[in-house]
Structure formats: structure tokens, C-alpha cells
Length: 85
Image (cartoon, rainbow, N blue to C red; front, side):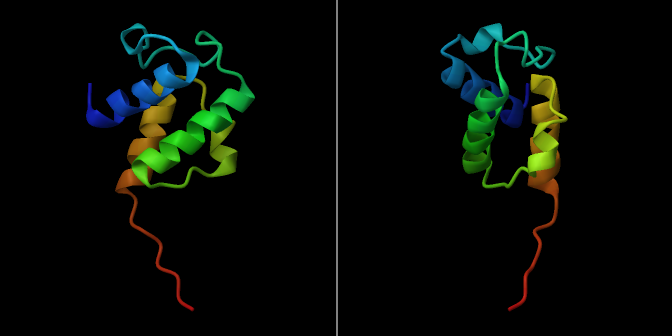
């Protein structure tokens, strides 16, 4: 398992007070009893941990731990947007 997956699983485990080794990429958020509020709170933790910004509309498309890991991987490799004043 890669670093992104490990860190995401650790965040989820801490948030839900469950052992990290009981979480796999195939687990759905429903299986882990993660509701929409939990998903928002977890996304804030993930954003802070990886210094990224997860688009609000992307949250509704996340169904599994693997979806989250894949999304974080894409966001961390995307070129930074440069804003001009």
C-alpha cells in the first residue's frame, strides 16, 4: 500500500475509532458507518494532511476508501494553479 493510502486509512481509522488494519481500499463508506458529516470532517483532515483542496462536488462521488485515495493522488500530482493579482 502506498503512502497516500496509508495516510488516508489512518485518518479514517482515527476519525471512526477503528483499527487501521481493519480498513481496506475496497471498503465502502457505508460499511465503515461513515455518514455525510463524517465524510466532510474526514475530507478536512485529508486536505490538511496533504495540503490540497477537495472540490465540494467531488465529495458526493466518493463511495469507497479507494475512491478517496485515488482522488487524493490526482490532486497531489495536479499542477498548482497560479493566480495573478
